[in-house]
Amino acid sequence: GRYEVTTPDGDTFVVEAYEPEAGRLHLLRDGESHDVEIREVDASYDVKQDGQRHQIEVLNERELRMLKAGVGAAGGGGPDLESPIAGTVVETIAAEGDDVDKGETVVIVEAMKMENDLKAHKAGAISAVQVESGDSVEIGDTLVSIGD
Image (tube, rainbow, N blue to C red; front, top):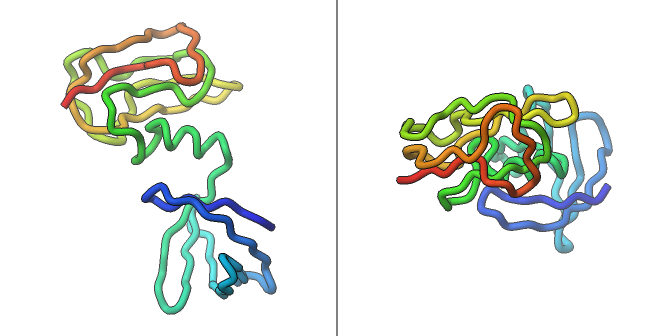
């Protein structure tokens, strides 16, 4: 198939790939061909290419949008954590004045009968909580603001 790949640095490129045999992928990128070994480990993959090992995650569009919005370890550097999904706030974990670490759950939003832990996109003190349990949120709504 054809896949869009985003690196941790935010660079994106297209790769064409096929699986000639189980545990091996043949990749074509910008006219260069690469054969890699691949092994699934929990929710990620261990990829070996040219003697080097890399851990990768395969995300669908929703997971990528959530990751960019601060769910997990990545996110923007600004003060606001914005909702990557439309749904209902189940619980606000962090309160104004709380110190949070990057990646710490601050709000839980239910969407399509699934609870999603929305995590701090940076470390700092919660300067404002914009939502409370029961609130409906749309994509891009500010949930909390985090100061330095």
